[in-house]
Length: 346
Image (tube, rainbow, N blue to C red; front, side, top):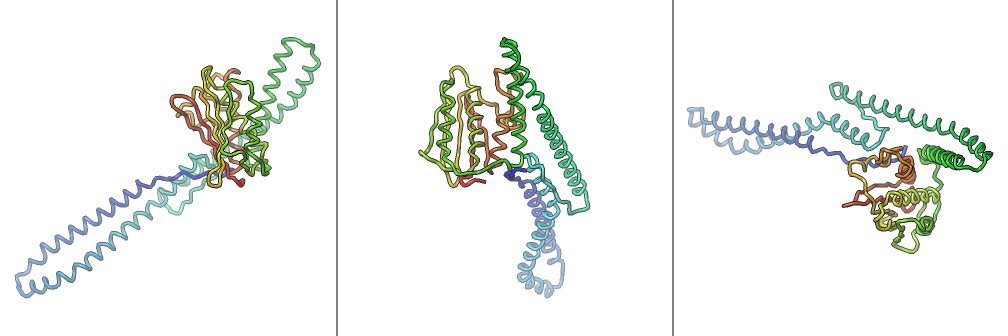
């Protein structure tokens, strides 16, 4: 399981509830104290007793405020402890929504919160099992498809040249590419496939940009320095660059400007950004583009892209290196993909 950053949890609701409870205690105690001072002190007809009570009134003010403060603190601590299971559950829900399927919320009470926590943990376990079964099915099917694909390739070599053979060979190559990407996606799941080494990222980027020479729109490289060293798997980072650049070029419009690849170094990290001038990605779709087989264009036409695996592979690679990858839709059109890698490797 890759390391994921935990999103911040908004505890303002719980603080407001604790504050309201505290205010209620203060108000009640203040009313009771005022009632005592107004109604009890003047109730005696004995002037000597009233005089003595008036002398005691001053020394009693400080202890009274001390008791009120103590009551406020006790109420505040009690409310916070009472709401602790709910805060932990909210934190677990936030982690689950961020993709952390290893989250477990501890249940330390024997009330309704414990029932809710137990149900949440069972749900997470079930979701993890379902996703694991799906991934294993894809892996098994991909392995099983390699043998018939190989046999088809051999059979095609024995056929005479024809338009039908060319079309079949194209279909077989596409199927083989999809199977290869599926196996690569699974191989990157736990990050063990990465073989980090020191290399010049700018040099690698120049090679990748050169491979797009002659394609429209033009791909431009803007490095912040002539050489930027990074400790990572050069082959995998090359795959990320190729997929991002190919995605940007493929989805560009006839009047789109150049695709720009920028590389910079900042505070122990290396930042890559690929910016295109294509139709852009709707903000509602941005959170899903890294999911396997997800495509904005539901038609899955051969003209509109691949199989929806390229960006998933990019995310697996970057996760395996302890970095992050994000997408930012631009206005009025275009998209920027940003990759941040630790300079010294994961």
